[in-house]
Amino acid sequence: MTAQRRVVAEVLDGEHVHLTADEVLARAADRLPEISRATVYNTLGELVSLGEVVEVATDGRAKRYDPNAHQPHQHLVCSGCGAIRDVHPGGDPLSDLPVSERFGFAVSEADVTYRGLCPECAKA
Amino acid sequence: MTAQRRVVAEVLDGEHVHLTADEVLARAADRLPEISRATVYNTLGELVSLGEVVEVATDGRAKRYDPNAHQPHQHLVCSGCGAIRDVHPGGDPLSDLPVSERFGFAVSEADVTYRGLCPECAKA
DNA sequence: ATCCTACGATGGACGAAGTCCAAGTCAATA
DNA sequence: TATTGACTTGGACTTCGTCCATCGTAGGAT
Image (tube, rainbow over all chains, first blue to last red; front, side, top):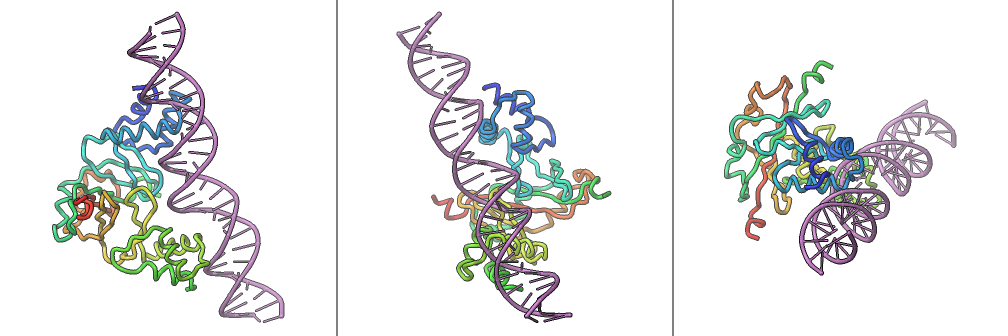
């Protein structure tokens, strides 16, 4: 555990946190100015491998990193401003996929992205 | 309707077709060697705006383009080889998200990506 | 205390994916 | 024929991410 890794882990802490790697770098650099991009990517990759952080790709742009990895959840994304909230749908999305639609796959996971306008963007 | 646009539209035709922009370019260039990358991107963008094609971003890498836009469906992705199938889950994923989990958003869409191993990858 | 070693950090080069722009082409119209 | 406008082209550029050679440093060995 180096100072760099600790700072990256501390930046990624809280509810509804979905930072890009660049945002993580910027916030880490506030506390440790000489931290490098490569170290941020390396550390994020390790946190993902450890299951402490999950990657979220909601828009085909930069991946975002979500520290809320221990509680299963899905994401609600604003089509206007890109804001992301963690949400907990009722029911198991996996059970909605009948065997006849599984093509012999061993299906193990279902990622759901809900899209719509947030209250701010709906007003404008 | 130019020759370029026609070729791009023809390349994107069929079931379970999920090509990247580069793959579209390569196949279009087989028939029309001087077609340019910019034209492929322009045409794909127009097809998406027209609702004839949907963008699919299953892996945080290159976007894929799915011509099966008129029948609502979700995607099943192999965690091993990246193969993609169109699938039709029962029930409406939107109805699984209770109002208390909508944070005031006007939710209009739910994208579901099922993940698992395809029969080929499960064997290996 | 000094030296070694190995892991991690660094920064810069590189690559993939996609966008942007000025210039060129072409067909329809005046 | 000249003009116009839409479409295409190629290349420069941006963003996001990876790779790699080098450097620093902490801890163990001498």
